[in-house]
Length: 196
Length: 225
Image (tube, rainbow over all chains, first blue to last red; front, side, top):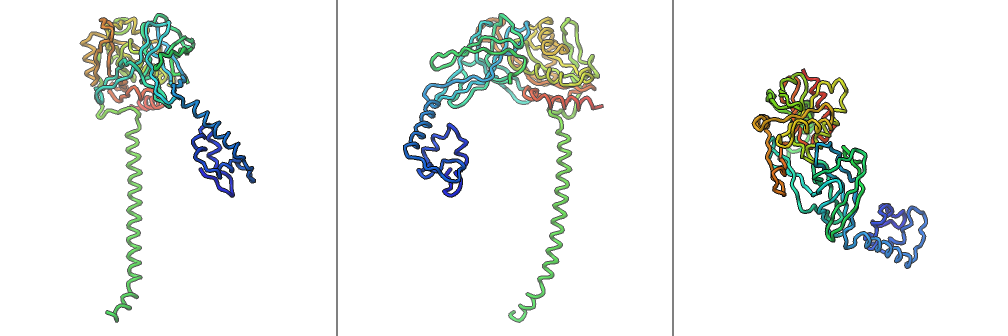
């Protein structure tokens, strides 16, 4: 992490972008003066400029590490099923950028009667192994982590389908999160295969 | 001792060097043989492990099930002799694993060349005849690929089939308590029967997601006598 007084500063500093704040706080004053990437002659940085620098990164750190879970949904999709079926599943990755854990407790859509979080279960060994699913009260989204809902794994089961949207359609879908009875309203695509 | 010492000092070195040279050759040859053998054995091992699916050994004749097709007519496995048959157990109220496996099998099937497809039959066997009638099954299976066939039968015929393939299933009541609200935990393997009617390979539902390796296995099975 330290830079060489006679050569160029070590390059990892340059590439770390917004995650610099903890690093910078631990750097010595000497290394600060050398944050002039790749320049042969060092530009002297003023002490006050450095403090502005430190405060800026400290504040971005706070934004990301606030108390409330900060939720982001990636690649949501609902499986297209034939009219003969009255159930389907919704998959997505839910990212929690916050410092506290969040929980996916359910969902809702006008197309169906109910939506429930499910886990896939495996019981027994070898040929006798059976795969099933079990309703759970909630699926955890760990702090600074993610919950992956994917085929063969955890999913939101959509039950009592009243309409059967076709591949390529977009549907309104709500996911329910805790803490705070939050609802996230999404437009999600209908597809036969996972959305990339 | 003090007189003899210079003599013994002078004599041994050439002898020791010859001795060392001989040992070095033995070690070198032994190493070469060991490396050669391990490469050969490794290659043989790889050849045996070339299948992506779990290969049964020794192969045994696949149980000749007799179930009901979409037109309610009996369908026997033996009628498909000469084709490679891939079948799996499930039920149409299955929201996750069954449609995932059938979608994967449809992708495998569509990745094959037309002349290869003619030699393959994918079958979905419903272990839930109470809710899956012939028409439902037909609509369900053909939605994944028009060539796929759905079969079911009496509880007795289904149990015999599941047992013969070493599988298992059980009904799990739903939360509502209603009679038709239940889920089915079931074996999620796909069973591959070769053209001679022998049960040859098994795939769990995770393996079915690897389309390229599945296609590779099917082509290898089609090349067999």
